[in-house]
Length: 120
Image (tube, rainbow, N blue to C red; front, side, top):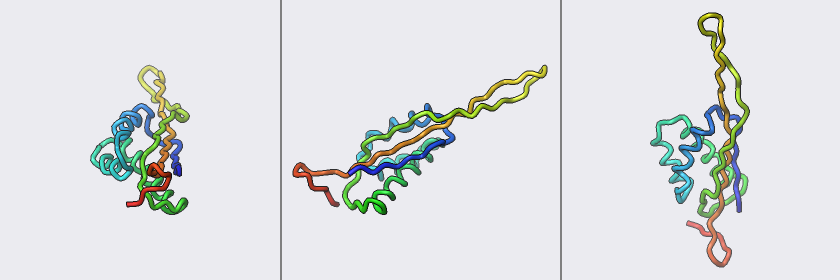
C-alpha cells in the first residue's frame, strides 16, 4: 500500500532540498530518516522532516497501516519563483529570485514473499 504526503510552495530552493534528500534515500525506515534529519542544521532538513512525519501520520490515521513502513520515493520539484529586487546605488535595481519547491514523499508497507504485510 502506498501512502503519499506533499508539501507545496516550500520556501527552500530545490537544489538545497535535493542535497539533503540524497543523504536520506538510503535510510531503511522513515523513523531512521527523521533521526538523521534532526541532526542536520540546514533549513531544508526541517522541511523534509515535517513532510516525512506527515506521511507517517497519514499512514496511521487515514490508511490504518500498522506494518513496517519504507520510503519508496522522494520527489523534489521546482515551484514558482518569487521575483523580488533590491535598490542599489545610482538608482539601479538588482533582481532577486526567491525559489520555492514542491516536496512529495511516498511510503510503502513492506511485504513478505507471500504477499502479506510485515508487522513488527
